[in-house]
Image (cartoon, rainbow, N blue to C red; front, top):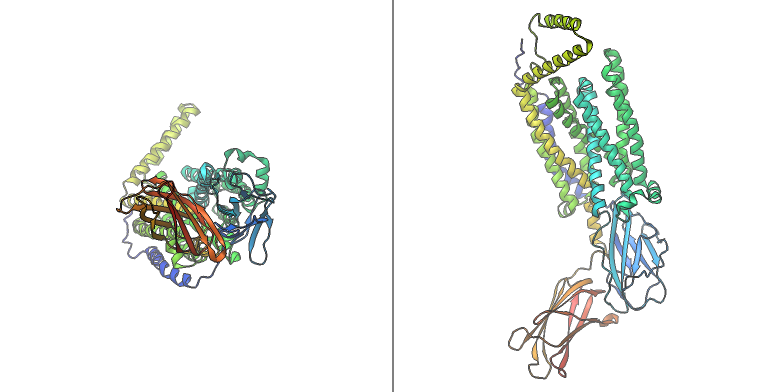
Length: 640
C-alpha cells in the first residue's frame, strides 16, 4: 500500500536554508565592516623598486643592479639577467646576492666593468612565497638612451602551453578532491547504503584518480612552469630535485603520500564496510572510517594551505587552518551535491532520510564557508577599491554572486525534499509473488546448469531494477528534486572554476600595494599627456609653419612621442629633416636625442622614448626645410 505524502508544513530543513540564504545576503555588509579596518598584508610578491630605476639615465655604468620586492621570494642562478643593447649578457652571470636587511627584500647582480653607453635591459623571474611564478623587465641607460635589439618578454612566468596544462591540472585537482572527500562523506554520513551502489563507488574512485593524476602532472611540470616553460624540462632530474626542495614540491609529494592512505580508505569503505551486515560492527567501523577519513582529508586539504596564499602574509597560524576548513566545507557541500545527483539519477534505492541528512550537511557547510570566506576576503582584499578595481576582487564578487544563486536554487531543492516520500523507492510485491518467484527459481536451478542459473538471476535483477526505476521516475517529487539538484550542480561547477581561478590570481591588496609603491619599476610616476605647439621660421622659401608635439603618457619611463608639422596654410608639411632633444637642466641630464620616424605627410613618431625622472624638461626641436635653411626652437614642459 502506497504511503500518502504528508503535508510538510514549514519544514525544519527549509528554515536553516532560508537562514543560509539570509546569511549570504548579509555577506556584503560584513565585507564592508571588515574591509574598513583591514591592515596591510602580503601574498603575491611584487617588484617595488630597482637601482637603477626603470627608465633612468645614469652618467656612468653602475657596478650592480638591485631589485626590491614586497615579500620574500625564491631566485635561481639565472633569475636576474642584464642585457646590453646588442642582447649580450652584461652581468657576471653569478647567483643573485641576497642584500635584504630589516623588512626590505632586495637582491642584486654584479655587472661587468667598462660597460659602454647605451640602453640596458633587466629581465627577472622569481617564485613568490605563495608558490606562484612572477616575472618582469625594465630598462635603464648609461650616458644616453640608444636603440636596442633586446625584445622585452611578452609572456609572463607561468604562461604558454606549459602554463595552460598546469592550470588544467590545478582545476582537475580541486575537482578530484571535491569528489573524493565529498563523495566519501556523503556515503558515511548521509547514505550508508550507497557503499554498495556501483555508481557511488565509481564517483569516489574517479575523484581519487583525477586528484592523483593531476598531482603527478603538477609535480612533473613544476620545474618548467616556474622556469623555462618547455615541456622537455619536465623530465630533467636535476630540475625535479630542485622542485622537491621547495615548499610547493614538498606539498605535492605529501599529497601523493596521503592519496596512498586514501586508496586504503576507499578499499575498506567499498569492500569490508559495504559487506558488513552486523549493525553493531558496522557502527564501529563507521566511526573508525570517519575518524581516519577525516584525518586523511584534512591532510590533503593542508597541502594546499601550506603552499599557497594562506601560507604567507599576516596571521598564517590562523589563515592556514581557516583555509583547510574552507576546502573541507567546499568538498562536503559540492561533492555531496554531485553524489546526490548521481544517486538520484543512477540508483533507485536512495530514500528521503538520506536526502534530508544531506540538507543538514549542506547547511553546516554553508555556515562554515561564509565564516571562513569572510576572513579570507578581509585578508586578501583589504579595501573597497581593491574589491572593485582588481581582478581578484572582481572574481570574489562573482564567487559571492554564484553562491547566492546556488543557495536560491538549493531553496527550491529543499521544497522538493520536504515533499519527498519513500513510496516509490521499493515497490511492494503482490501476496505470494515472492514465494512464487522463489519456487520458480528453485525449479529453474534444478533444471538448468549453474551458468544458465546465473544468467537468469542477472535478468531477474535487471528486471527488478527496471521496475524500480520506472516507478521512481514516475514520482513527481523525486523528478522535481532531480531537476533542481541538476541545476545546483551546474552552478557548482562554475563556482568551483571561479574558486580555482582565485587561488592563482594575485590578491587585490597586493596588486594595489605594488601599484602605489614609490619608486616603482612597474608603475611610472604620476603625470599626464603633454601637448605643445611651437611656431617656427627657417628664413627660406616656405620656411614658416607650426610644430605640434604630443608625449604620452607624459610620465617617467617609456613614452610615445608624436610630431605634426603644419605649413603657413594650415596643411600638413613635409620637411627634409626633423630632430628633437630633451634636457633637464636642473639635474644636468641631457640633451637626450630623439630621432622620430616619418609615418605620413607632416607626421612623425617615436616610441619607447625614455624619460628618466620627473621635472621641467626643455624640448628642443630642429626643423630643416632646405639644404641650408633650418632652425632650432624650444619650449619647456612639465613631465611626471
